[in-house]
Length: 140
Image (cartoon, rainbow, N blue to C red; front, side, top):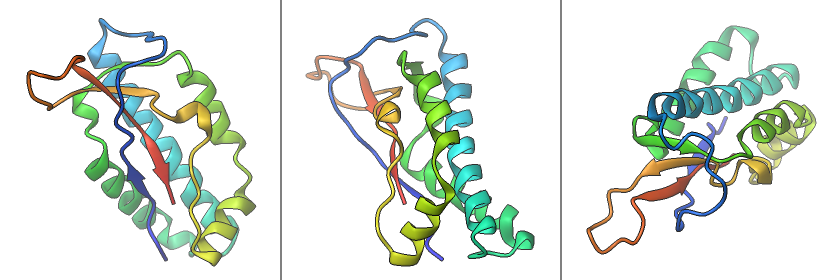
């Protein structure tokens, strides 16, 4: 079984930021987003009988490990206003689409409301115009 992975979408900071002065909250929201995605994917794979229920915890942990390699939530500083919609849209993903993506080895991306929803501190040089970059564009 392929594990869920995240691809980083890096772009100039844009969109409405809801928690610019609350980095602790943004870090938790980042963790919550990754956890929701990995739980949803794992639950769907169990439901679709692609993994055994007894393997669910291992698969969720593997998903989170891969996600954390791509997105460092400790550097999250803000979230966009689409965060709540993103979380709701993850809940609304049809399990069959996740199962089909795994069976056919095709990409499954998060809902568009999740693209760039977590803003992380940039490690770019001083010439960068913005200290923020957008992150979170997971694919399966």
